[in-house]
Each structure stands twice: as structure tokens, then as C-alpha cells.
Length: 141
Image (cartoon, rainbow, N blue to C red):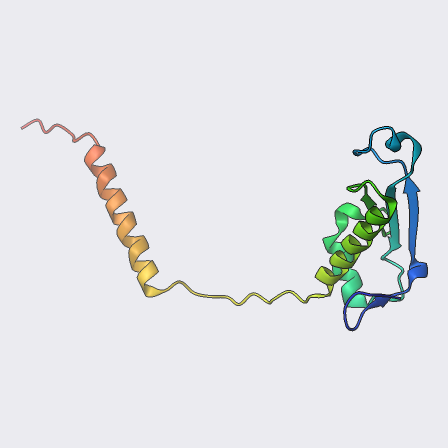
């Protein structure tokens, strides 16, 4: 079991890892050893995720999702397979933790009296500046 938060734990059978060749640093080792990790997690059908967390995760991680709702994480930052595997798991856990946090509800606020007065004063000053630039009509008297 992979413990994400106090309430959320994911069974390791739900996470599928595939090791592929990396495009990162490593010299000739890159051509021989599969160190990059492709982690797949079926977020849309996971029984481990509460419904509200699943909905938020699918919304927040749109860039990582396939059409079927499978979360795909590529990790090739490090030269070793173990480090890349841990990096991919950490990124998955971080995405789920973010989705588990309930966003703060926005409360409507009104502008203060001081900000209203300041806005009107600025408008009046700008209007006067523009009026001074205008060409005065010539009186034929």
C-alpha cells in the first residue's frame, strides 16, 4: 500500500511501471540501459480514490491524462532506474495530495470607501489633463 494522506492509500497493484530508454544524460549507458520510468495509474477507475478527489485529480492533471483517464508520468531526470522510479512515485503522490486539498471558497468583497474616492479623484485628474489638451474654439466677436 502506498500511503498518500491519512485517509488515502493506493494499492500498488493499481500502479503500472514500464522501464524505457532515457533521452537524458548518461553517455553510452543511455543506449544500453532502460532507466526512464513510465508510470501509469488509472485515475478514472481507481477504487482507492474518494469521488471528490478523483474529480479534482482529473480536472487538475489534464496534461498527464490519456483519453481513457489513465494518468501517465514520465520520469527520466536521474541516471538510475531506482531514482527515476522514486521520482515518478513522488510526482504521483504530489498530484493526488494537491487534489485531496479542498480549495478555499472565494468570498465576495466590496471596494472600500477610500478606494472609491481614490478612483474618482484619478478619473477627475485625468479628465482635466485631457481637457487642457483640447483645442479651444475661436470666438468670432
